[in-house]
Image (tube, rainbow, N blue to C red):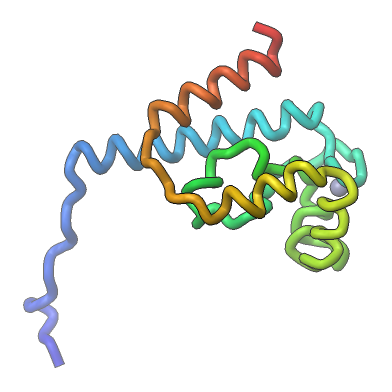
Length: 138
Ligand SMILES: [Zn+2]
């Protein structure tokens, strides 16, 4: 068994890695804000306006779709996770809802989820900023 003093010191992140990490967080916050704005700051399922959250239809582990607005749905906490009939509580219910209300996005995601991530964060940031301006009418 390794002794405590043999434990490797935590690797320090380079400034470049920290910057990249901060950029990813900034992009996700921007993505979440726009998903809510595009939905008129209402839950897309029940139309409620309390405790709004931005749900990733395809998991955010999929980097190709992590910051894609078509992969987002604005949901209240109940419709997101808390209710039995919610996006996380019943994926079959949520898939049926998606097919009925956003069939074009369902088809787009079905194809797009298998594409390779191009790691072009500048393009992602530009697209999100353009969408934010469109939604806000700038
Ligand atoms: Zn709701």
